[in-house]
Image (cartoon, rainbow over all chains, first blue to last red; front, top):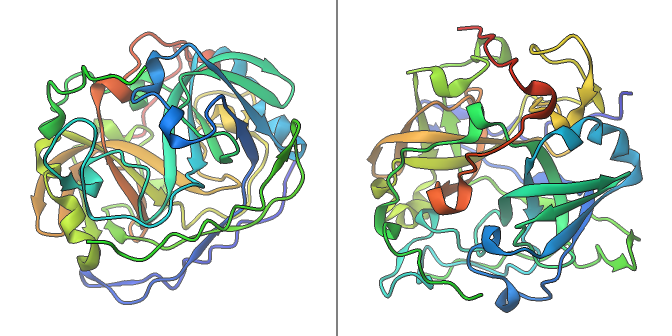
Length: 173
Length: 173
């Protein structure tokens, strides 16, 4: 089924040599909404993957057909809008360190493009509802995309974690 | 440095019980642009991580401070706008299978929210330019976000890949 067109509103974002001359705002329309046990940021565990709490990812009925075969994947990547994000700083302090770090070297939810991203365990699917474990989104977050987590594509097992190395023991719950 | 505010335009996306009553378009403004060796979709390898080609991720000067400390991470997650995406189907055929699958069970670039997502190897940083290996974005893709890849957060080593299991040997280059 073909459904509409994505209007490439970014056509005027043109690179001339190595410089960007003009930018334009891009528009997204959510494909659903996330129902989670977390009513605000303070309730979210620092590392969502450690929690056993279940979130319900509600995909709009018009997109339900696009979920076909997703049940075969144990993990999915959920992209959502950080709808409680308001403004940002380019240098931020995190729970992991007393020293501020560059925003793009952190996972702070306060970002110029407030896009949240979590790889979660897919526990069950019931029609247009996905039940997932390990999602750290606030209740009511607009859902933007779901992608299958593919080991050969997404997994990186040998990595260096920069300033975060050895600091991730700290956990709120 | 505090820079502006992200206007939470999604406030009216309200869940009543388990249903979404109203949706609204969300706006993003790119933070940079991607310079890659791929001029169109056909040039991109099926699995970008296998390529040794280098892409240049140009972050706008106004965001450069946010890159502080990113050089310590071996891998970063790059989120970008799939600017060549036009329309989508909810059932899609991929290079990996003759049978169509649900769009959200694939990594097809043609999606309702055309957000691209790749974990790449960070090779070097020069001021506001990041050099990365394994990025499968088309040249000129608007850059939306950069997040550090954190093993404890992002890695899932025991996964089931559904319909894709055992099919990923096929490679274009």
